[in-house]
Image (cartoon, rainbow, N blue to C red; front, side, top):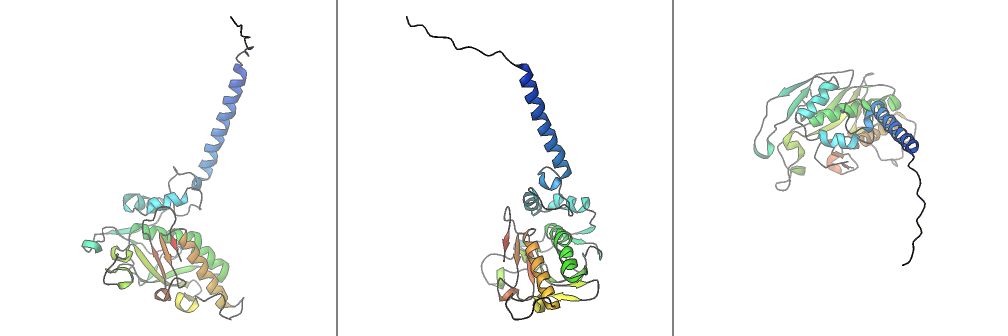
Length: 257
């Protein structure tokens, strides 16, 4: 019968295993500590309005669009006061989720007209947009802060573009807001209709007009990171005088024009 050579065996090295476990444990502990210091990257960490954008932000914002108690908890956790309103409307225009933020000029959460009741997801998005995008852009481009938002409305029981048929607008359930402009702390007004301009309209760079346009474009881009839908004058003529922002459930990301 053929004889097979036996391969030499290596003795078990417990010391190597122990070192490997220490290294793995150290990496895990460092990772957990790093996530604790950077909650924006941790999907388990609760969302706050002031939390910077991170790897887990898109998932947290998508969850925020479901509204309800979880959304209100985010506002409470972030120190944003609000009044919960009773449901209104019926059918396709039932507004089951309605809140009205308490006036906060310092944060810019003040509206004109003042009545801007909408879903929690819309107002949580507005608060985050103001903190992370609008206020930094106003200070950078206009050397002032926003103290008031000029809005064209939140709730309107209609279909998209006012058509007689087709899908219902997010405005039908108060899950949207149309932003016409901003009032700054120094008294200036920035309006979408008059201050939004194409990048090739012939006006010189470095002017106040240029700064206003740059501000509006930057806040539009910032809204795209927060809202389910962001539509600007670049979308169509129906949006020449406002930014349409809504919290349609689109999963991760959103529709931005």
